[in-house]
Length: 219
Image (cartoon, rainbow, N blue to C red; front, side, top):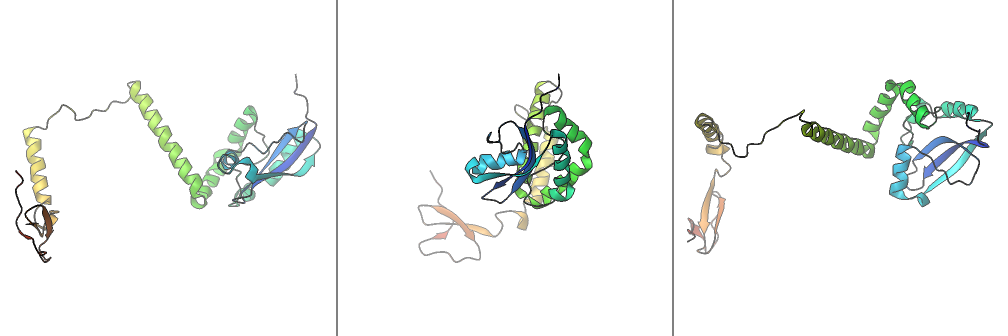
């Protein structure tokens, strides 16, 4: 059975009064006072961060039915529109956001447009980039943990193990090569003491009054 057509169909614009960023979408409803502000992902983040009271929604245009509404949104929210640095839309308009329509939008709109938009966001929106990197890290970490729990990935720590004598010699040789002379972090320093405490200074520095070369051995 076909879903009953809503009474009103319109294009709206929701703007954040703090950042001036905006989102344009379409909405069909029987109640013009339903408080709808939009369902965009970045818009949702903006509302959560700055509060509904700092966002204003205005109706830009009424359309006679859902079909013409989609057509009109597609005309407005195009590739050029998405390039505006204040625009919070991510995808092309004209497909709606019901489950089936949104999946269709993602597949038909194409990876090319999506990738171009992501490239623009990476270059112009540090906030979006930071959130995306955070999500990717979290997703990668969770996937690794799941794979490890399922036995698909195994990793060992060094706990309870020992280096072989041959390995110890190699480590010692490499360490001595990198820690002698000027490569040593303590190169050019000396110990001084005041009889109560010890400290190191550079050999080129003057010894403070009350201090002498050497160090007191703590008993």
